[in-house]
Each structure stands twice: as C-alpha cells, then as structure tokens.
Image 1: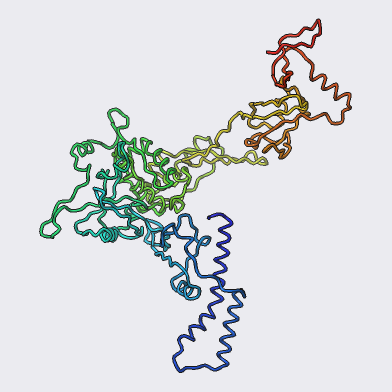
Image 2 (image 1 turned 90 degrees about the horizontal axis):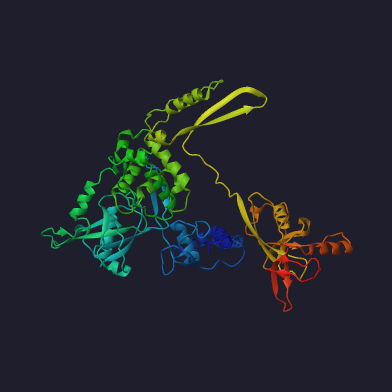
Length: 602
C-alpha cells in the first residue's frame, strides 16, 4: 500500500480534492448567504440570476464533472480502530492535514469521514535554547501500565509532550484508582529464568532499577519511550483517609543482600588487579537503535574515557558557555549512562543518550536505521564541545611550512589547534595527518599541513580470488556437458575464463571457439563480452558453448575434429556404451603395436 504507484495516485487524488475545494468556495458562500436570510427578505431577480450564474461557473471551474464521492478515511486507520493511524504512512502521499474549519467545510460539502483529530505539540529543537517548534503528533505514545501483581493493567495512550502528573491522573481515571494512594514507576524488566511465559506473566513483577515518576516534566524529557512499561504501586490501607497505609513495595528492592552488594560495587574498575569488575552488560534496543548500541559499547570499553566518567572528573570540566556545545547535556547524559552500565548487572536502556543525540542532530530523531560511524562522530563532537577546556576560542593563524622539517611544522600545527580545542576527547582520540600539495610548474613551492582528525575512513579490502562455476556445452552432441569450477583473480575478465577452460585437459578447446552466454531458465539471454569483469557477473549463470570454426573449409573442420579426438595416454573422454549409458574416464592403457581400438578406462 506504500508503493510508488499508490503514492502517486494518492498525491493526484489529494491534488484533485484541493482543486475541487477551491472551486466550491464560491458556491458555498452563495448557499450560506441564502440560509442566513431572514424571513421576509427577498432579492431581486437580477441578483438571484447572478448568484446562480456564479455557482454554475464555480462548479464548471472545478473540472466540469460530477462532484467527488463522500470522504473515506478508513484506509488510513489501523485494523479494528477508529482513531489510530496505520504505521508507515506519509504526509502528502497517503493523507493531508487540514485545519478544523476546513474540515468542517469539507464535511458539509461532501459528508463522510470518520473524523481523525491529532494534537499540535511543542518540542524543543535544542536542549540549550528555549525555542520551541510546533509539530503534529500523528502517533501518540502507548504505555503499558500494570500493578505489581499483574491483576490490573491498561494501555494508556498519551502525548509525549504531556506531563507526568497529568499522565498519572489519566491512568488512575482509567483504572478507577485514587491518585493520592497511587505511585507510578518506570523500570527495567528482570528476565524470567525459564518456564512458561504465561505463567511468568501471572507472577509478581521483579523491577530492576525503578525510577519514581513524580514531577511535572514531560514524558519525553523523563526519558520514557513509546511502549514503555509502567509499574503501578498502591498504598495498602488508609483508604478511609484517617490513617495513611504502607506502600506495597517493589519486589526485589528490599533485599538487603542485593542492596549490600550494590553498595560494595566501586566505580567499575578493580584498580589493584587492573581489570574490569563490571560493565559487561547489554543495551536494550529502543527500536532500530542497534547502530547506537554498537557505538556506545565501543566507547564503554575504551578504558581511559570510562575511568574519566566513572571517577566524575568530567563534572569539573563541563563548559556551559560554549556556543558550539549543548550546555553540558551530552556529557551529563553520557556520564549517567556509563554509570548505569558499570554498576548494573542487567541490560540498560540508553534512553538518555538517544534523547540528547536526537536534540543535537535531528538526523537521529525517530527510530530509523542510521549509520553507526556518523552517530559516533556526532557523540564525540558533542562530548568534546561540552568538555572543552577553552572558554573563549581565539583567532589563530597557522603559518606556512617554508621548507621546515615535518616535526617542527607538525608541532606548530598541534599547538595552534590546542589553542582553540582541548578536551579529554582530543587527548584520547585526536591526531594529525599530513597533507601536501605540489605544483609541477613550481617544484620549490612547499605547502604542507597537519590537520587534526579522530577517524579515518578506510576502504574494505576486496577478496583476492573469485570462484566461478559454469557449464561447458560441446559441439559434438554425443559428448555430455561438463561442469567447471574456476578460481580467478577478482579483477579478471571473461577472457581469463576462456583461457582457463582451454588449458583444462578435459576440454582442450581453443578460446576462440568458446562463446560465453548468460542462460536464464534454459534460455540464452545474451552473449557476454570477453572484456566484462567477473565482479559484475556474480549472480549470472554462465554457459560456455563450443562453436565451429567460421570461414574454414569442410576438410579443415574434419581435420580439426579428428585431431581433437586423438586417443592418447592420460586424455579424458566421454564414452557411451551399447546400452546408452554415459561414462567418463581417462585412458590408462593402449595396445599401440597391434593398434587395436580397445581402450581401458578407470
């Protein structure tokens, strides 16, 4: 339903509807004027005729045909739903967005429906600024809310820009709970150890690292995601309001041994041994975020950087005045994420990093697949700017090399670079690469530069050999086809295939008498040029046909065939017995003196 042809058809339909709307405006105005006339009021016949003429002209201007059918929005709705949109729809291709007044006019003119309403929400484009942008929220979040014993549950649809306190009121209203005796928690689900999933669902939830949702911040700023599981904790007793009861408690959080074990975990490194103590945990996929998880795991296992964050050395170096940074948000969210990874014994949700990276670079908004290297570069850049030790970046002019040594010029370039950019990211990840420009007309001119870098894009090495499998069809109909497998260089052409076949003792056909063809479903699709590279024919079924010598006489052709069929020791043949069965063998013995035609095959 989202193909290019369907998209174009829907675009054309949307355009036709909008053109019809414009054409019907004049007629609608005339009809409204007639409806608003008070009893007893009349118009002259001349005015009435003019109104009728305008209405007809407006109808003709809309295309001259019959009016469109009634509005049908059912095809954009999800199955068995009257309000939810199908996933994967695109604005402008599958539907258009109109204001309520325009929809009201369309409903009066054509009828139909159903009415699909969506809220306009305000989101911040940058965490460091107060500027907000308006966007239509087509897919509100759906959060899975349930009690500790899993006896009461509901799926609550709520806007990501809505606040946590209002979300709590809506959940309590759906489940008929008292908000004063209810608390909401976001948590990580502890994996069940074997058993049936249905049986495990009926048991009490074991929440890992729960976080109380009691504030006025939005769901998005609270690092929640679509489909998040929310735990409902109720107060035991105190329903009459006379005496406050105790809370149910989160299972798995009151265990003194677990708490003591957590308190014993240090910053994540065993300094005496020099190895890792924790940090070997996974990251939950938030929805096509495997590219981000791969980059975060690489950085987490970069020992000096992780030590820097676990020891909270970054807190004293956060530069909130840097206009190129995010006011310390990237460093703060990443520092919190590293602490969670190195203090937890269960998978972690990287929601904070996902949120701040989406705000820093809109490319990473949503849950589309992205490039892992691009995210890693953006994350390192954000960490560098937030932790830059240079408060005010001066203007630096880099002098020319002027024939000096590489060591001296490189040191000078590095010093100039550090005057503007210096942070722990530069200390750990940056280097310089030499670039030089030479002019043939001025060999004495010297222009060498040492530019800073933190990543090098290297080409993936290609395989040195490529394996080609094909079939050889002989001119003699009594010879069975031969399957051939060759190992050739990756940059070889089809001429190399012909030469390799010609060198095989089983074939012994000159390259000029071999025609390579692309055969698809027993049909010769095309003849292949011998200059084609093999790397372009990896998925092509190649068949080599033995062709006669063109331009040769009948005697020469028979002579060539006779010479090819010369029987000698070590030569391979296809032989058919009296019963019509084919055999393949090599000549191992001959009676040369008696010149007998009897040949032994192995």
